[in-house]
Image 1 (cartoon, rainbow, N blue to C red):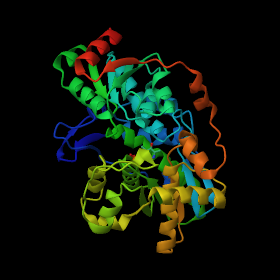
Image 2 (cartoon, rainbow, N blue to C red):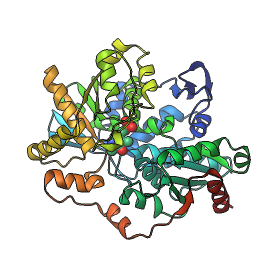
Image 3 (cartoon, rainbow, N blue to C red):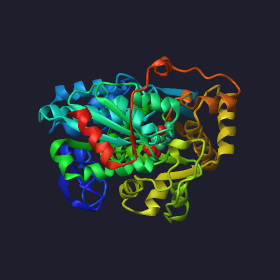
Image 4 (tube, protein in one colour):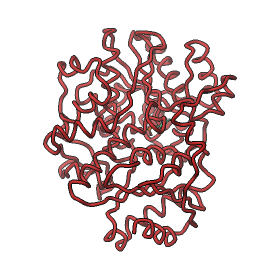
Length: 436
Ligand SMILES: *Cc1c(COP(=O)(O)O)cnc(C)c1O
């Protein structure tokens, strides 16, 4: 499998290059080519298989020229010690695909862990330690930190803005130890990001350390996200109806992953882009005009993105053709008041506790089914565990939310971070000390 830039489909690079460089030098986004086709027999075969088994089968179709079968099997099973079950709200009509059974309790575990396993594979093969730098405003950092924790051949430095992430998010970043080092920056998320950007162009640092990013635009975070769409299809195909996926979206990586696997042959009849008030994509679907904006803050804050980094990828997948885009995907969006009402109704009607992002996906699915009067089986992606948003969910539902053991134990672990001013030199000095 090779990778080309959306800005130049003629030139391709290897999987290893796309993995470690994240972004092509022409500032486009990497796309895989050629996409292998998973035939009807494939979908017969995978019914009832786990995420790890399906991930291995698709990885073989993608990477058998690069990586041996035994290594692929080992790395997919190491990536996915948890599953992504489909839970029926109304059998044959409305289901949720629960993506929050991994260590950080959100779907980002799937992409982060697979990418980490691949980086470890290549760094061991090249006998070279890789240093990952990430700036986080909260959620991604936890998935990356936990995904890379104890992965041989890789060190992770995470920069986060002091006092501006939730207690729980901070615990996810700062209590792991080992190969994961948290830098607590006296500044904003933008300051953290500026420091990381400067590190990547610092020639001295790059000759001493092999630097790489775990950026959310890395194509290797998206590829494994396709595995759970396939996993869900395997569970709902028994109803013999067209399958529709509804994906709560911010940067649109998750939805791009669904479209990529559809183009590999997954029989998806329609996609739904579900957002909060940051609705540039639903608006584009409606009007054909793409107008990125400043983001607005909402209660579904992991989707507060005004200029989605994967929009280019999504449009490219539809041949940059608005009519094609619109024929394959519908968009719906909700404000905070509607989201709260939706969370409450979903609990009252289905007895299901949904985080605000997940509720938006379910509401969008129901709106589509009502509007199009289509008899489809709808699968809505549950992107995070409700306990990640405990105070909000408890307030809206008026009842306590259980916290899974793996999250609860973090509360008692001591925080370990290196506190630095928002200055590049301070970071560089301290990074060189920690990796020395
Ligand atoms: C990151 C995130 C999203 C948005 O996913 P994208 O791939 O950026 O569209 C939705 N819900 C939750 C809980 C998230 O953490």
